[in-house]
Length: 158
Image 1 (cartoon, rainbow, N blue to C red):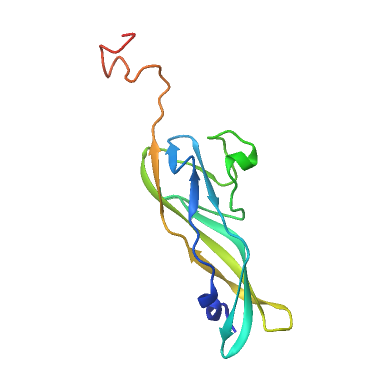
Image 2: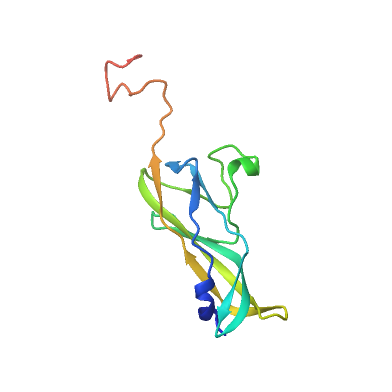
């Protein structure tokens, strides 16, 4: 039995969530979180009943801007980490420019089977291909008015 034989039992793909609310700010960290847990299913393979247990081992984040990271943590929300928004986390990413990006997370799983006598590891891994998530990255301006004096000479304070 090979890992390819177990593909039919693979966990469903997981979407990454991006804090805050699928929006990023150019030059500041956006926080990525993937919710994946061990997944056990039962079924029949080659006419024999079995249980298959998949355990997530790594998370391959593709950020949509040409960069990616292979991490061993699914990430946690800023609230769970006790951190303020836009602070770095082990799974955060900084977009250098504004725009719309499509990011995803592919999750790597190891597998074990149980044919009735205990768990047996299977060599290899299964990778689930996560669906793309739309992320809108904005520019932030630190000003008390909507426009600079260069942009609009009649703005308050000009």
